[in-house]
Image 1 (cartoon, helix red, strand yellow):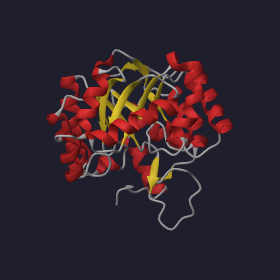
Image 2 (cartoon, one colour; image 1 turned 90 degrees about the vertical axis):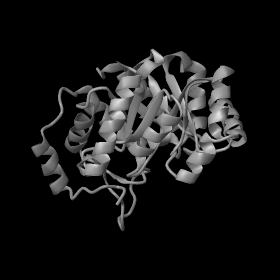
Image 3 (cartoon, rainbow, N blue to C red; image 1 turned 180 degrees about the vertical axis):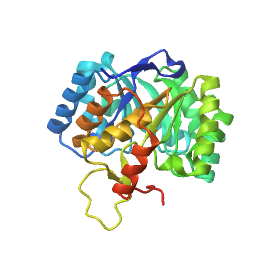
Image 4 (cartoon, helix red, strand yellow; image 1 turned 135 degrees about the vertical axis):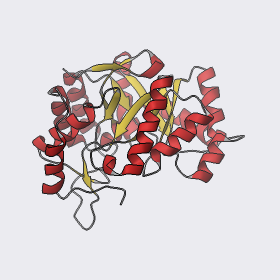
Length: 285
């Protein structure tokens, strides 16, 4: 069984592993439906997608016709203006064949100029507020990537009382002192406000570099079940956070299998041994 946890202030008991639907953005409907079978097998009840994840919203559409009540459904927009965000939300609802989404998120909001547009007059935030008022979305979130992610999320929370945040979190990235300090500060604020914290890149091994890409993930992922176990268990060892699964449908069973067997976080010695053995590095460098 995969543990469930209250998703911030939403009142929803979400599985601690959230399905990252980027994994079905580049596959056929048949392959996507096989992924749904895996989700149902492990009791996953929370899906996180985005308008920019290829065909992911279209692949989710048929699922929602049968299982809408079984899933907390989240999507994202990368648009920064009111009009752009509003129009993209309409497309997302149509593509997923739903009347509303549970969580709508400002996607990858780290560029300072884009932040000013999104948060300013006529910006996407105004569309978010209106969509919530009209019942098209229930809750509002914001996501960020890169070394400045926790700092920018803190800035966004200062501007608006979002219900959730999403950012990278794994053993390697937390070895960066500045990132770790910012992450801890973000966690403190989120605990105080009961803001849900979603984490991504749990099984990142490093950038692809000159290697041939063999997965749909934009970073090279861990492959062996034992290594994935360590990475997933390390993330789940942090109380109060969620782990969004990797963006490759063939890695999904391994991540869920690891999560289903989670008992405690592995010691630093085991994590350091894996980093050394696999020559792991930050995907942001």
